[in-house]
Amino acid sequence: MSKYYYHGFKTITDGISILASGGIQSRRMRGLSSSNGFERLDYVCVCTKRDKIAYDDDVNSAFGWFIENQFCFIISPDIPAFDPEYLPEDIFFGAKMAQFLEEHPEGQYTNLFDEMQVKDYIPVSKIVGLGVPVSILNENPYFSTKELLSFKRLLSLADALGLDVIDSSEEDFIENYEYEKEKTKRRISIFEGKE
Image 1 (cartoon, rainbow, N blue to C red):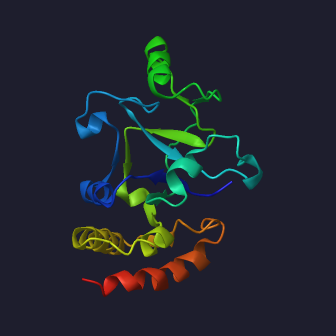
Image 2: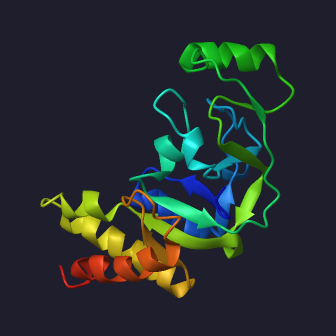
């Protein structure tokens, strides 16, 4: 099991917003009044990478969906994360998930075996690294000027906060953390000279 937690984010702009706002906030703390996921309004989803043998093709995993080959934050292990009740059935997506949550207003649940939750907020001081899908970025020859500037801003914020930058497109990037950290520095340097 990994000594870190992880939280994925969809866009470079989302990552910048999280770092600039001081942390990862629940939907309610962001001023939202509806939720379409197991985190409901008051929780933040994170995951931890379990033993390798647990990850086979038949299992829904947060690490596989939201961390590998994605932008993500690497989070210190000293946050109050807990295991919600695991619901292994694949029916818990979309309308069926919404119906289940409506019928079960109390309690926290997940359909991803490695997902955990944190109440309300994870401060930026608990974020230790930034996962970047370098191979995907390298394969995109049409990185727009706006995207490039946003990416540089994200890297600049990560640097200012003293975050490690790790290539999340490498299969064992967590198991080889120190090696990947050094290798990633070289790989992302190609973006620093582009305009």
